[in-house]
Image 1 (cartoon, rainbow, N blue to C red):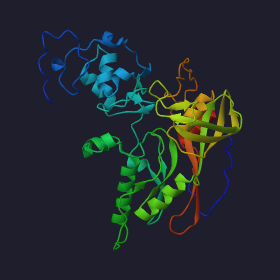
Image 2 (cartoon, one colour; image 1 turned 135 degrees about the vertical axis):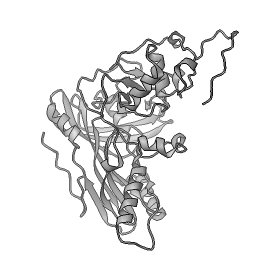
Image 3 (cartoon, helix red, strand yellow; image 1 turned 30 degrees about the vertical axis):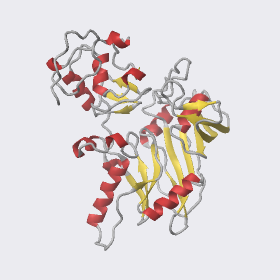
Image 4 (cartoon, rainbow, N blue to C red; image 1 turned 90 degrees about the vertical axis):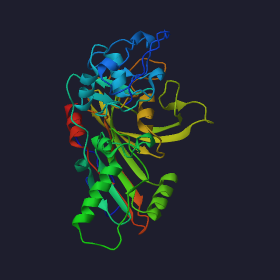
Amino acid sequence: MSEPKPRKRGKHSGKSSHRPKPADPKQTRPRTSIPVGQPESNVPSVEAPVLNLKPISPGEPFVVPKQLVGKTVVAILRLLRPGESWSKLTDQVRRAYVTLNGVVCIDEVRRVAEGDVLELGEKPRSQPPRPSDVKIVFVDPHVVVVEKPSGMLTHRRIEERNWSDERKARQPTLDEALNELLARRAASGPRTRSRSGLVRCVHRLDRDTSGLLVFARNEEAETHLVSQFRKHTVHRVYWAIVHGRPADGTIVSNIVRDRGDGRRGSVQNPKVGQRAVTHVRWLEQLGHYSLVECRLETGRTNQIRIHMAEAGHLVCGDPKYAQPYLDEMVRDRSQAPRLALHAAELGFVHPVSGEDLFFQMAFPPDLELFARSL
């Protein structure tokens, strides 16, 4: 595959338990709330017909309905695999047999949202990335630019911030990993009177997207960078491998949090949602698929994935948006190893020096091999 030649813009560039109460004999309605972590003998039986669920086989994706929102991963697997014990299912989750929205999940008590895609694999996948998988490409007292590996959240969700350190360590977030890496650097470097505190998140990438991000290291830098993102002056280019051959052009829509089935999506009413603008440029044909460049003018959650799927060009390896609203599911036969979306270019004005900084990161090995296979 021939790599597209990114534009040059600056001097810097980087490659970048509580025991359950006895059931009330007068109660006739089956329970659907399962206490996670209890011995199997203490767990009340849960009958799948209550939700009209059918057992799933390994490799068969399951889309979480509204009735199961807030349940844990292992609780839902217990519903979908009624013949399996709690201990076996918990073990499979911890050994990386399970994916959530195409990303390995090893936290059995992770709670799901409507529209999440859960899948139990036939064999374990690679374990989630660790802090050592994060690469720092630029750092100074004000900002730090990193290469984010796929499978790592940018920052911890609000409902997860009170987790124990042990549980967080199972799947660390990018900001947690970066704080650890910077602390190691500070400990091994020369002593200074003042050291920057915890990194401050000013933008994010989806868990399963790889690529470049910038973090602020102090309040002044945070204020300046947030302002640049709000004014849409930050240069952000993504590479994506998609179905078909998209035409060059600009996609403009209003994106809402729930298009009607629990997923984000575009709506026709311009008075609701957030305006989203994506500039698409075709780069290379890869069999029945294409390598495209997506330049963000706005940065809404899942923006590129939504825009490409709605245009009929699903991003390869994206189970979340393979199901169009009120339409048949798109069959993704690309065999993508994960979501084929990568933040390849990042450019911004340094919040203190005013210097124009620009960074590039080539496809990571998994997507490079996938592109060549096509």
